Image 1 (cartoon, rainbow, N blue to C red):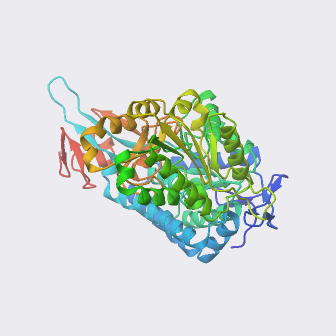
Image 2 (image 1 turned 30 degrees about the vertical axis):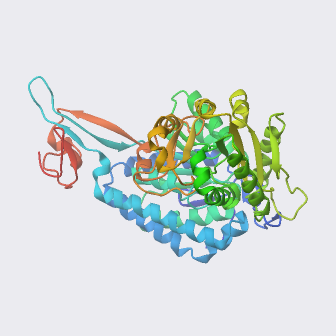
Image 3 (image 1 turned 90 degrees about the vertical axis):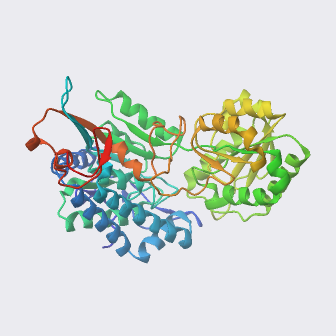
Length: 525
């Protein structure tokens, strides 16, 4: 199906808005020919109304039916073929190898949610039988209702229209209304075609899926404040996520916002680690900082070291490698402008030394920023929390600490992050525990002798952390547990067997694993 530049509302294309925008190739800064129509408030209202109507039907669906639908979504995405890859490459400059891998991750995580549904244990069915002075109480998870999803710029597949937020919400049994990212509107429309085709083929209500385009903030604001929306999934900047969170909190009936808003992902490198493998760590660090032109929310942006000759030699080595590394392409003009502003703000601090880079390529043919290394002290980090701002690009900041106590004080001053990393030696295990536990309080994932870029889509993954990394540190946006953002527990007390969902019936007709009187079993009660 050819691209139209239209919004997709419950299976129908719509272009009521007079305002339009165009996709831009970041490698050449040239605009495409197809205008994409900003959604109107009326179109937002229709999309949400259709989602509300769809939920009235979807909430009754068995898990197996939703699992079949998810498998069909994955198949329809694959059926888009190379057109999807080439379209996304023109809009993001990410390259075909990266996008091919990301497509596999996207369809893989969709199918993983389908497998989760078929297993059934995700329902978290809990049964406490009636006893002396205690009623019979049974509990399980149910979908929240229509969810608004905000697509991210840096992962046009895995965190966008059909990404993890969408997959987990659909798996929960929630219709979705997606606000497409203006950085890749054509890619977004292709995904909308695929999901819409799956909706039709599986006979789901048309309002199961809608996608709205918009180059400004109006469409997202209308969507979040709409009374028919029950939750929001967002991946993006702190400014954008906080704005959405505040809109949702000010509604007459507030709703949860699950916003992942980035991180500086602090890395601690011990003196012993530098002595044993400084070259190896430097190579890995540079690769992590420059991967994807630094446009990962897990980019290692703050490196903490105790001051020493070895530490200063290490910084010199990293600086030289960063200066020699190829300059990559940034996703779009907004990312380039945001990065330039963030680095300029940091560099304006008198305690910051720019060791290499720090320059935008404003007049070049592509949106670029030089690979950048800066240096400061732990005291400066403690004195100015603006030095913990995320630099969304190939940028990292070293903070030298006077000694281990100074390092511990710097860690104590850290804000919430998605990840923290420690590079240390086995000989230090007896001494490093307290520092590791201190770092644990600052992030959702603690990494030992590795690098934070690269997030495995597995059940144990935690991609979330204390504010300002996220608005909901008890949740994850990656992995199977992401489904629980869009579900809620309901308990049934002394409700007759005939009125209970199959997952809570004594005979366990679904054959799923349940917690029955404090023991896990897949048997009958």
